[in-house]
Image (cartoon, rainbow, N blue to C red; front, side, top):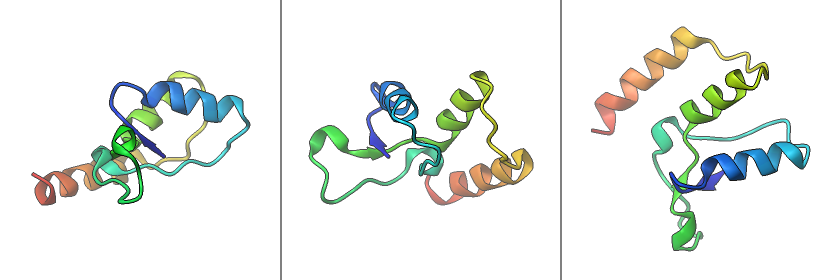
Length: 79
């Protein structure tokens, strides 16, 4: 999903309300879409999505240790 830091939650909530069950995000929101207009410049931050799901009692099945390792590694790559 593409979003900005200011509208990610609204987009995620709209997708959930529309019945979406699977989501695609990016660690730390890194990257974007070359075909997106300026208002869609970034990927939705995976960590924010996971936090949202957990805070709303939605199962994620995410391995938190693996996620923490992935975030650490991405921090080394994308400074």
